[in-house]
Amino acid sequence: MVFESKLLCKIIGFIHLINNQLYKSKYLPIFKRLGIHSVFALIALIVIGGATRVMEAGLACPDWPLCYGSFLPFNHMNLRVFLEWFHRLDAFLVGVLILFKFTLSIIWRTEIPNWLPKTYSLLLFLVIVQGSFGALTVINLLDSYTVSGHLLIAFLLLITTISINQNLENDAIQEPLIWWRLLLFVPLLLTLIQSFIGVRLSSTWSAHICLSFNKQCLILN
Image (cartoon, rainbow, N blue to C red; front, side):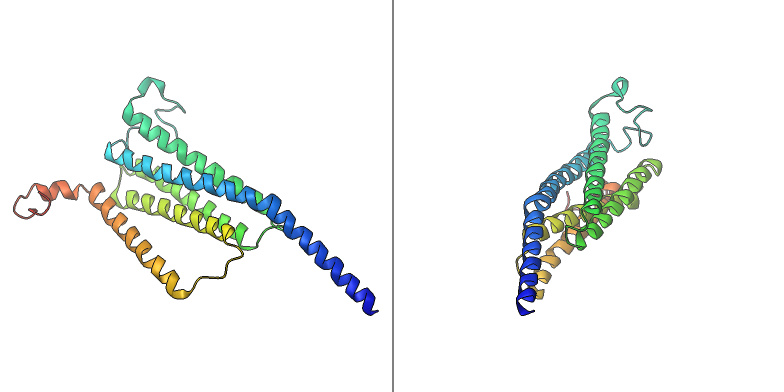
């Protein structure tokens, strides 16, 4: 009886080892690679969005989700239209990529950590909200709060994606100390606040208004 129990324990341990190796050799690298592509695509999306804002191209495509009623507006193409069109294209590809990762996490849910499908569902929800804000920026003619929310959600998508990648890379590393988490969280929060203030200044033309009153805005002049 003791021998049979030991044998059963060894078999269970061997099966568990095989499952771990399968997870490490097959599924984990796939999510890591997709995660890296997602980070670069999100960074490009934020940069292109910033360029679109600087070039005042937010309404270069007056309709949504198409641009001048077509997927590729050759007849209306110029630098501003291209920036807005490419920004939407990149956003669409990011959404497809995140949807693909979420689908894989559901298919392989028995072979991956429980937190992964849940986190990808959060990412998918953020993408839907982000797309809605993107539509509202056009419908509401670049309303300041809508533009600010659009940027902040993009940062949340990027932060969440990077966090997922770090957890996948450092799965076996011990949880960081609370003070270390706080040390990382504070500058991140300050960066988000600064970004929100910056996009509010940009979307309300506050700097231009301020500079029109020479005495009150010497520090910016």
